[in-house]
Image (cartoon, rainbow, N blue to C red):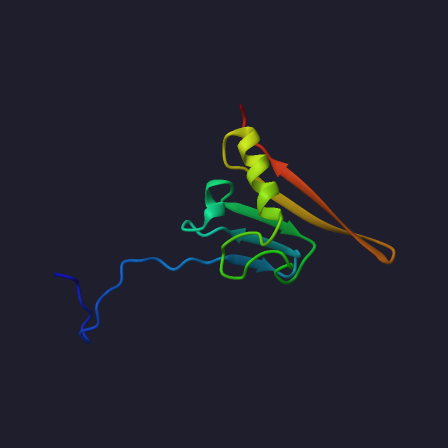
Length: 108
């Protein structure tokens, strides 16, 4: 029998997934991919710097990258045969915004 609260409501055992955490003072985003997402087997965490909001290209519900970036993620992960962590950064140079991407590969 399921456990119940004093008011009769059932106690849910599922924990809540937090898709991303934003630190506005440091301009960083830590993005956690949902365990039930297809991208979870390629990466569990994506680190983003230079943003105070969730950057475009990442799903707000925690499913991971949108569009063609998913295929890049899959290829990089398969090359190392293990999940990888992505580090994305936005660098501003005068009036042109450019971005850089880095991958933390597992030790072989």
